[in-house]
Length: 88
Image (cartoon, rainbow, N blue to C red; front, side, top):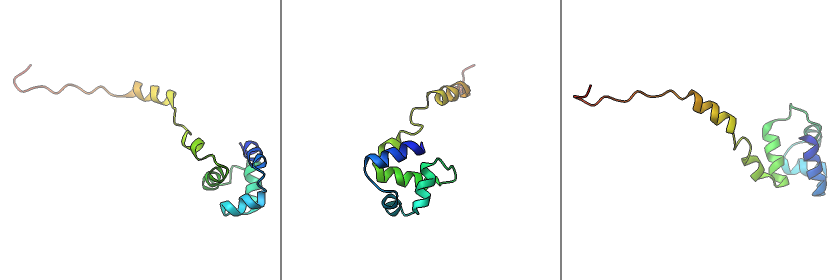
């Protein structure tokens, strides 16, 4: 992902120093993010995505979780029907 962010930044002709200033971090943090350093916070990543114009892409993250939905549906307990008074 770091390389894709780097390519997106370069296509927009935004220097690392400018991106860092707009995000509110050091140029070194942007460099680490682009190198794939997992220690860079999610907060920094989301701000970088916002500056580069990827806000809508971030909203798609885990939005279509078909496997998770199927697993959840398989584990849903069936609720016994409530008995009506006078019925057996």
